[in-house]
Image 1 (cartoon, rainbow, N blue to C red):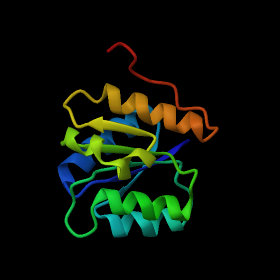
Image 2: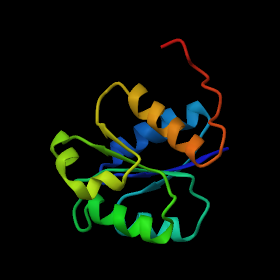
Image 3: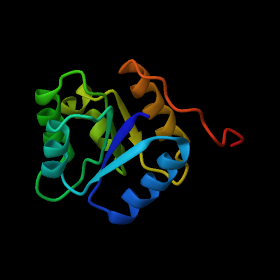
Image 4: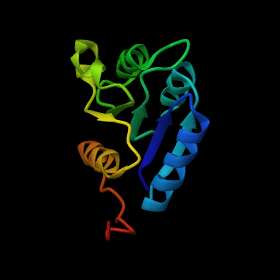
Length: 130
């Protein structure tokens, strides 16, 4: 079962993603900050990181560079409410950039692609009737 690390300072957002991705068949780990995410990635066992950008303290762009310094093959999906970060070349190291939406199908698709990049078969989609 692929393990996804959700990094977002919004507890409700993490809960939503945790429920949705668990339902899809992923093992989900949560972090509320960039610092917490880095510690989790260092412990290993993460297959893909879903990373918010606008967070207090260490933002997602800095966390991205530190995560890739630990594991430069770690697939990272940036997930933010702001499309303007796409123009920041520092975000180009991420595997995907998804603007937050109530429709999680785009995010789920990018996670599945990132898991495949890691050489892992994504779980069967339980509810493909969307």
